[in-house]
Every structure is written in structure tokens, then in C-alpha cells.
Length: 164
Length: 99
Image (cartoon, rainbow over all chains, first blue to last red; front, side, top):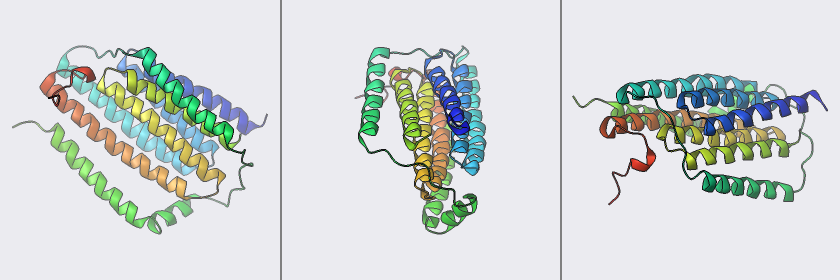
């Protein structure tokens, strides 16, 4: 077993375990912490796929930004309600059946398609290529994304405003 | 590790996130499940980009990450606004739009 395969199995186990903890733990705050672990594990998967730049973005935006926002929201709403947020589950059997069916469907499709070869050699550092692609073929998409972020910011402000 | 290892891992995480979305009562818990599902999609994108030696998948992963952060911000703002009015985040009891 190569080092990369060993790393993959370790990270995969950590990712699946923390993901399961996110959807199964009753304490919402713990669920957010497990989500942070799952997001960092996903970032390490990006590292295994030779994308250190995306690993950094994942840590900054997801593990840093999203987790912070969710923790803030939990703290705010806990104070609003004045009781601890526990989250219970419902329809557990139905949810498990649907989720298993989706996984079996995707895995069955994966088994049918022909096996691809090994990963091609890395054509040097990909980060400059990402930058050129962002401002080259995908410049219009990048601008649209900027508009979307402004709209999301204004929308979040509008929803969270106070009445007076 | 082949491409299919990564795709199977992503499918597993996606299924776990779907389970969370379907079974959680708390609106914030549902959002966490959606986060897991979007992460699985990102793993797929990066894996395909790496194994096809195409930078497009990495660029779109950047886009989906940015969009997800915006979605979380708006979603949590909606959750807080609902909290102010209804004093609950139980998704089953948020039936204002039911006729």
C-alpha cells in the first residue's frame, strides 16, 4: 500500500466518521464542531488530490467562515429562545432508506462504468493556471459571482434587520 | 487510489448529508446536512479535475465554495428572522405558507 492510499483511507475514515457525527449527535453545537472536522478532512482530501490552493480556500472559507457564522447563529438564537438547542431527528428509518438507496444507486453506477487509468502526471503548479482560468475563460462567471455575493450580503442584512 | 475511491467516498458523504437533511427537525441541522452534501460535490469536482488533468473542475470548486458561503449567510439570516417571529426553528412547525 502506497503512502497516498494509506492517507486516503485514514482521511476517508475521519471524514465519514465526522459526517456521521454531524447528522447523529443530539447537541447542535457539537454537530457544528464535527462539521468543522469534516470540512478540514475534506480539505485534506483536496491535498491528496494535489490541490493545495483549494485546501487553503477550504480552510479559510469553510472551516473558518461557515463554522464561525453557524456558531454565531446558534449563540444568537440560543439567547433569543433562552434554552439549549438540542436537535432531535424524525423519520430516521425513512431517511436511512432513502440515503442508502441514493448511495447504492451511485455506487452501482460507478461499478458499471469502465475503470479509468492512474492519475496523469501533474503539469506543474496548478495555482497560476487557476488564476489565469478565473480571469480568462471564466471572467464573466467570476463577475456574476461578485454580483451574487453582493446580493447575498444585502439579502442577509435585510432578513436579519430589526424592525425599527 | 483510483478515481473511483474518491467518487465512492463523495457518494457516501453525500448520502450521509442527505440523511441529515431528511431527518433533522432543526433548521440549522438541515443546513449542516446541506453543507455535507455540497462538500461531497466539491470532492467529486476536484477528483475529476485531477484525474482528467483539467483546471476547470478546480475553478468550479472555487465557485461552489463561494456560493455555499453566501447560501449559508442568507440561510442563517432567514433562520434568525424566523426565530424572532415564531420562537422556533423546528422545520415541521414553520408552516406560514401553508394555505
